[in-house]
Length: 481
Ligand code: NAP
Image (cartoon, rainbow, N blue to C red; front, side):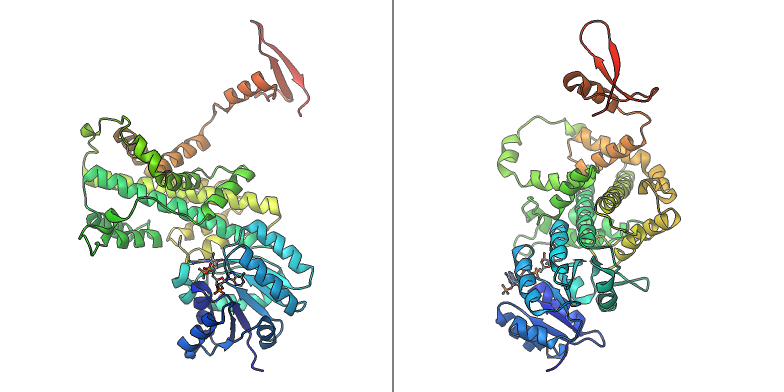
């Protein structure tokens, strides 16, 4: 029987494109399997150049693969993935490798890795970003799993990944769920970045009266500078588009209710559990939720707002430059918060994640690819224990440069009644982070008042509780609970 060195299970858009990508690389022979055989037949007949080996059962699939067998699963996340893993573990042997390239929740990956490891088979949860185009031409790949599995898998994944500045956009992220965790944070940052760009567009449009096509040119210009990124690039394309039916800008006929597939929600839920304030990402998720509440929005549409008739953002060019700087500063905050979540996740789950390597593999193939990721890599290379990305010299310079504009833009948005939740929450986070003293002291007092939750003092060791009633304040040291 002909031998393949890698197999793909699940031949919908992502699986088909990854299979074609794999087949196009020298030295690879790819076995393919799909639950409904029609998809297998269609792929094989449409792409004879790929030399696929079509298989119609899991037994045939396993028999076709050379050892150690390596299978990439690209099926519907959740129950579909569990079903395929069940079947593969029946026909695979110890030492073989099952890779789940779907969008799995990292805790599911931890559970699956543990269960599959007990059979002696390696299980690798690999986050794959870049959509269908990336799958075909080179995605960014974030694999977890064992070092043993990485030895076999590494060269194969390197051969199909995007290449940025001569380096493949794939690295062994860490054990079990580390890859899917990092992919989840990637998506969270993507949510924040998209929301920030959307807010920038809205402010420019309402502040200067420019058309979407004119704003497209502004974004195209921004894409030549320090904000260069895939998301800025495609935003210009989206804004340039005219609707064939109405002749209007397409963005004006698209219903303004943003959907989601849940990875942003996972990021925020996880960050809440880890106690990491990913406020930019959270605001982006909430902004999508708010947009998708038409009944509430209709009921509130007549509520009073500011008299924006009188709002004058001043010189349009200066205002647009201010929005650009506010976007850049807020974007730095979103990444800084995302990396904080990675650090906290690594600590919680025992992963040795190299932050600089993560920024490197996000430089190509993935949705958040951007010029300034190199600076993140450099910041972590210079100081691997950096406590907050935003405190690295390169980013401090951006904060200095963007300061005034960032504050003016947030203030302008508030005065004009234009929602800018990601811009303003990023600025609040920044001010909170740099504050010498926070009103958290008062919150501690309130907590001790109603719940005897105790507090610590700035001038003495120990834990304290105050008897708050009466005119006299009694303070006593207590044991902390
Ligand atoms: P999909 O629509 O998520 O899933 C369809 C595939 O799953 C089909 O091949 C289907 O087989 C198979 N499947 C579902 N339940 C199954 C079961 N119980 N047993 C066996 N096979 C089952 O496909 P996709 O959009 O290509 O995405 C694949 C994975 O990649 C997903 O986890 C997705 O989240 C992830 N992902 C997608 C993107 C993207 O841009 N689309 C990007 C990154 C990652 P049948 O043909 O027999 O129904």
